[in-house]
Image 1 (cartoon, rainbow, N blue to C red):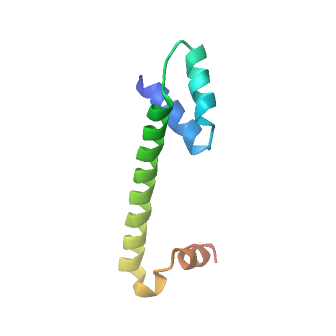
Image 2: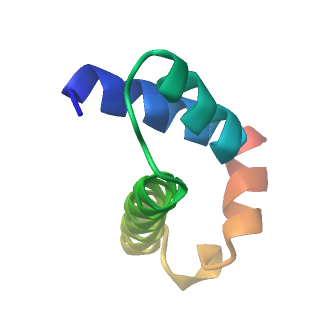
Length: 80
């Protein structure tokens, strides 16, 4: 799978596209991707997003202290 194909699939998964429809689309292009492959790509994306959130939370705690530990408070305070 090319890097361009992987990027397209990642974007579709981020948007919540149905994995079966993604697999069908790729099959029509003459390429094969299994549902398990799509699941694995989605899990890797989730791990990356979870790591990013943890990093953001840690940086905000370092900058603003323990009072901003609740992520919802962080969001509200960022908007206000």
